[in-house]
Image (cartoon, rainbow, N blue to C red; front, top):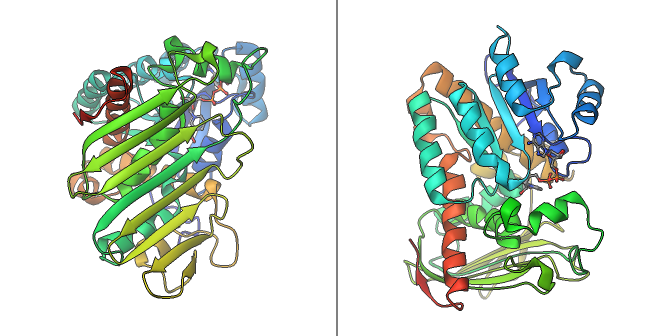
Length: 390
Ligand code: NAI
C-alpha cells in the first residue's frame, strides 16, 4: 500500500509547460505529482497568455520570476540557476509536444509529456535516441493506467486465471462533441484541426489510453493486423474523426475491438474494458472504479473490491485509499507520477538494473501509442481495410 512516504532521496525540482488556469488536464498533473513528496513545483510556463500564466503560477505558490512567458524562457532561465528545474511536464496541445520535448531534453531536462506523444513514429524514434544519448527519462501520462484494479486484471491474466485470452473489448466514448463546433472553446478547436491535433482526433485523444492499457493487461499479446473505420459525424471535423471502431487480430488468435467516440450522446460512463479468456472474464468501468467484475464460466459472478486482501499483490502494493474508500483517477495519476519519479531518480543514480524491471509509462509507451495510430489511419484512409500491424 502506498501511504505518501517518500521513496526517493529528495523531491525533484519540477516545472510545467501548459496546464494553466483554463487548461483541462493541468490539475490532473499537479494532483498526481504533488502527493508523495517526489516533486516540488518550482517553475512554469503555464499559459499562452503570459500574464494569466504568471498570475496563475503565483497563485499556485511559485515565485513570480519563475513563472515564464514561454517554454524557451523557462528552459534558458532555469538552466542558469543552480536550483533550476530538472524535470518538466508538457500539458499543451498535441502539435507542441515534439518541439518542447526536444528542447527540454537538449537542455538536460527529464520530460513527462502528454499523449498522443507526437505525430509520427519517426519523431518518437528520434526522441527515443536523444533521451538515450542524454541519459534522460521521457514519461507519458495515460490517466487510468495506474489504477490498482487495472494491475489486478494484468496479474490475473498473468496467473492464467482467465485461461487463454480470446476477446478484447474496450470502449472509451462520451457525447461532449455531439453538436457542431460553432462557438467551441480552444480545447475543441485545436483537437479538430489536423495541424494542431495531428492525424487523428478521438483515436489519439482517447483511444491511445485504451491501447496502452491493453498493453499493460496483455503484455504477451501483439497485434498482427487491424481494421479501422473512422468517421466525422460533424463534417467540419473531417478529415479527422469524432467516432471510430478498430478491429484487431492478435498473434495468439484473439480478436479485439476498440470503440472510441466523442458523439456518444448522453454517455457519461466513458470507459469500459472487458477481457475474455477460455475460462473466465474480467470487466472494469470507470463509472464503478472500485469494482472489478470477475466471471468464471459456470460459477456465480463475483465483484472484487479494490484494497481487499484477496486481490493480487501487484494490485495491493499500489492501492492508496484502502478498501471501503473510493480509489479513482487522482490516485491513478499519483501512481503514474510516482513511478516516473522513481525512474528519474534511478536514471540520475545510474541504476540501470532498477530501470530494467521497474514499471512506468516511458517513451516506448508513447511510441507504441503513436504506432497504433499510424496503423489505424493507414487502414481507415485506404477504405477501412485490414492492414498488417507495422
Ligand atoms: P487545453 O487546450 O485545455 O489546455 C492547454 C493549455 O496549454 C492552456 O493552458 C494553454 O494556454 C497552454 N498552452 C498552449 N500552448 C502553450 C505553449 N506553447 N506554452 C505554454 N503553454 C501553452 O488542452 P488540454 O485538454 O488540457 O490538453 C493538453 C494535452 O493534454 C493534450 O495533448 C491532450 O491530448 C492531453 N490530455 C490528456 C489527458 C489525460 O488523461 N492524460 C486528458 C486531457 C488532455
